[in-house]
Image 1 (tube, rainbow, N blue to C red):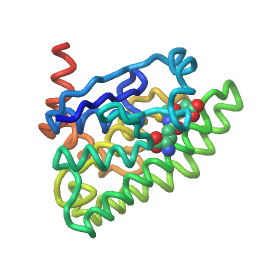
Image 2 (image 1 turned 45 degrees about the vertical axis):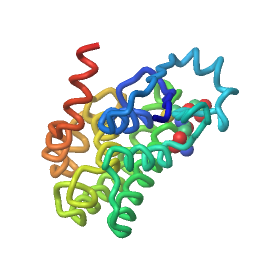
Image 3 (image 1 turned 180 degrees about the vertical axis):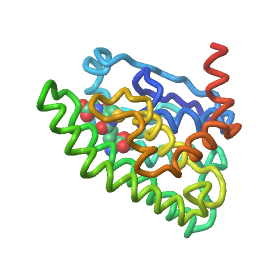
Image 4 (image 1 turned 90 degrees about the vertical axis):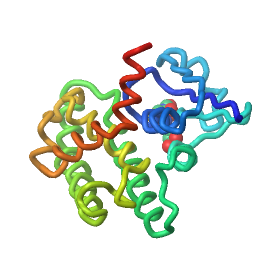
Length: 207
Ligand SMILES: N[C@@H](CCC(=O)N[C@@H](CS)C(=O)NCC(=O)O)C(=O)O
């Protein structure tokens, strides 16, 4: 059996979380190498593109969260076999990645600058993307983004929306997503209750 080592920040969320959930679902024994932000600063040169997450497979370093997500999605049965459904899944993965990119541009800002940037994000890209995700969900049949079942794309969207709904992002009200697209209230509850997701978080509670 291959040896897996996932390196990512020690947070519940971000680009690494769907990968952790899928590796757990695939029943893959993996080293969950959680690093702090200062550690990342010291280690970043070790990573091919100076970024995480990275997955080492038998010592070979792989980067790019969506590529890794698709791979572990396949291991876990969370990636569609059907080419069209796989395309739907990929579209959603790419869109969440784009939104993450716009959000990250507001990180590190402070005071009025942060407030202005977050308001701009909320009224601009965030609104566009949340509406777009609602369209993808409708196209997928209303329950999941693709394949009429849980896929890695749902794990990526779920973890991203959860971050917004937690209220942790300054100047973005916790109910912003739900007010804009109420369909995500049920969606988040449904994905959270999926055995794959629930079992992952239960396993963390035991450690
Ligand atoms: N396209 C890359 C982006 C990776 C990325 O930007 N990761 C963030 C953490 S979520 C990071 O390492 N940021 C540190 C930096 O870029 O300095 C991917 O999807 O893996």
